Amino acid sequence: MDLTELTITQAAQGLLRKQFSAVELAKAHLERIKSLEPKLHAFLHVAEQNALADAATADDLIAQGKNFPLTGIPYAVKDNILVSGMPATAASKILQNFVAPYDATIIRRLRQLGTIVLGKTNLDEFALGSSTENSAFGPTFNPYDTTRVPGGSSGGSAASVAAFEAVFALGTDTGGSIRQPAAFCGVVGLKPTQGRVSRYGLVAIGSSLDQAGVLSKTVEDAFLVLQQIAGMDEFSSTTLSKEVPDYSKFMDKGVKGFKIGLPKEYFAEGVEPEVKGLVESSAKKLQEQGAVLEEMSLSNASLPLAVYHLILPVEISSNLSRYDGIRYGLSVPSESLSEVYYQTRSAGFGPEAKRRIMIGTYASSAGYFDAYYKKAKQVQALIKQEFVEAFARYDLLLTPTTPTAAFKVGERAADPLAMYLADILTVASNISGVPAISIPAGLTKAGLPVGVQLIAPHFKEETLLQAGHALEQSLGLKLKPNLQL
Image 1 (cartoon, rainbow, N blue to C red):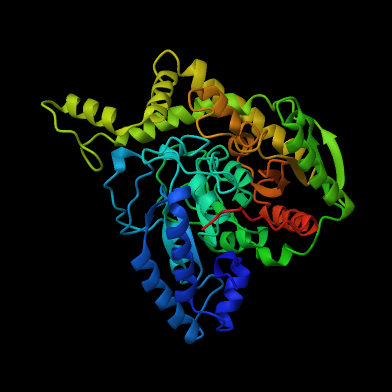
Image 2 (cartoon, rainbow, N blue to C red; image 1 turned 45 degrees about the vertical axis):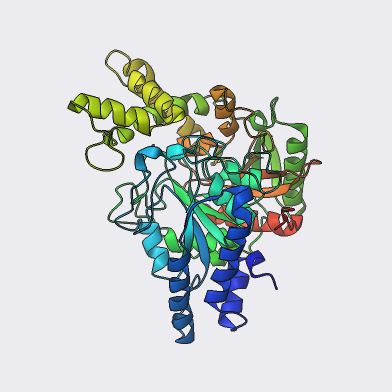
């Protein structure tokens, strides 16, 4: 038995039956990390000693019969989520030596169950990117083809799960940063409804758009984690007091009678034929199980990306202003206060962070605020309303997650606009606040994963579970990258 290939459910059963210990499970993943990291660079920090100590504690809990659904399960954490005592760099030089003083709420909730943090994963600096090439500490590589990107910004988390370095991983999704790398790496990526999961302890970039979520091997695994991290949090002003259902009750309900809309704009020019074909085949699998498919139109489909790239930079400009060389993080000594600010931010921020800070500062400045940011917020309201109207007619929307499979490392590095287009099919879910999930749809002829995206109404994650699990079971994929240890 290869312990690193187990799902959460399989690992939990093995621990309960004493087939192996939590320490053995953690060691197996730590050994795999050591073997693969020279090729992948998915991790920025590996917490070996902490992980083994936590695994021993988990074994004690299991021996005493005090175990929970995720007790003893080792996982990875995107390095813009705070884990007490561990680095929290957000893949930026400006936070290179920063150590988190407390746990994010989602980490605290998982820690209470006896889970095991293996380490912190790589990302685009401050989660600004779609390839994990913008990391100040070097890129992560795709486990299916190490000449290609894993997607971003949660590329390290996606690669770690795809390569069996972790049973699951946590990520953040501001415009597709969980779902897009999940599609590129052949794993499941779940972005909950905006406000379903606490943002307390996340390094903020887009406060109205950021959402923590899960990357996992199966749909069931994603919802096992969501069950534990979802819900109201007094420390997070953006969580909403909506009851979290027992997701396990929905897993096997199937899709019979579901009405699923296929927005024609999401299957238009620009989507690679192989991607389109695999996604359409996935849709037919749901149709075979009793779902009703219908082509439909989202007339505002061309707007979310433009709206996103006005709203987000304004929020970035505000949120990243705290990195001034005074309170924490990098500080470059200079003769005056203004020089400290200038030298620190010049040295600490990478090109993409600087680009978005400048765009956001301009768009929110006097004389331009109404023309840009205010107008973008007005259009955002139109986009939200169109989704509300669509979900009055459909239970789900089904689209490709990305227009292409993973592109080559360096292929879009010099062209920011081409890079931004990688999120064109995912960003609407963040602008409208609805939940969405990416599920592997198969491999291209070149052996690269493709993802199918399901989008549900606000706070209807259980609908994603029903359809996602049904699709996963009908496809029967067992994806595994051909990595030589």
